[in-house]
Length: 354
Image (cartoon, rainbow, N blue to C red; front, side, top):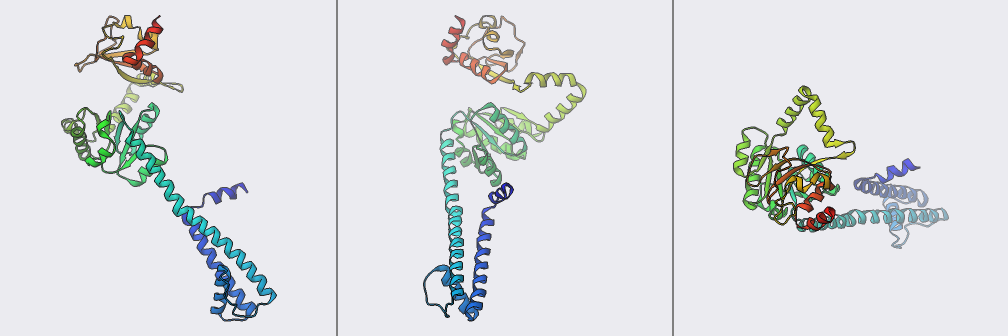
């Protein structure tokens, strides 16, 4: 019984429509044959009797109704009304409730998109884009996906992910994704030409945007940076390097895997910038005591205006406004440090100090 119930639930809308049509045809054929036999009338008269019986319009019968014919008519009426009622209900559900549900979902998504600020935009929901989506979901950040394939957009929306169907190289599509309020931008389209054009368009629309682009060919790296990309990533190169490193330096790779995934606890590498009013401003790492207060490991510091990272910084290293600390730890620990590094974390940090 349970298995039968599961199969019924799996019937698609198209199958429901076909079932209703087939069953109505069956009733017409069954009724016509029955009336021909019971009333001894022609095919047309028997079909006419079947139609007026199912529709209950009450026209005059074409032959003398015997008790058997009357009982047969009652059976046809109940069978026909039940089928027609089920058919109308199902069709109404398919054409009206389906449309309303779809419109409601679109309206809800548009509202969420219109409220986006400091979010991330991902152009391209393919294999590389899927990895980006999973990382975004794990990190709990606001983001939206731009994808040209309609079926892929539907899949993402079904998963509760904000997605827009459109061409990422077009300004109108990027406007719909609220690029003017976005914090970061990833172009992960399937060819370098599209990535270059998308990066160029995005940079013109938001000069302050941090842009990362996929580079398929090594020759595209320079073009992408000229177009406005802050950084470029080659999945093929990274994958090849990773495989070679696993083969040649398995112990190092195992160590990296361990520190970034300790059992079920995932550790993130993040950069945290020092704000102007932060209590950490002008303090040394020894004075700040960040590992003791947050449990984070400080791997490097990038001084404001400099490109090079200072790895394994000294405890006498002074933190100043605009400096970025590269730290390793849990998400909640990193969020705590971000509060400390900006205005909202001063009082909390001072209380812990006391």
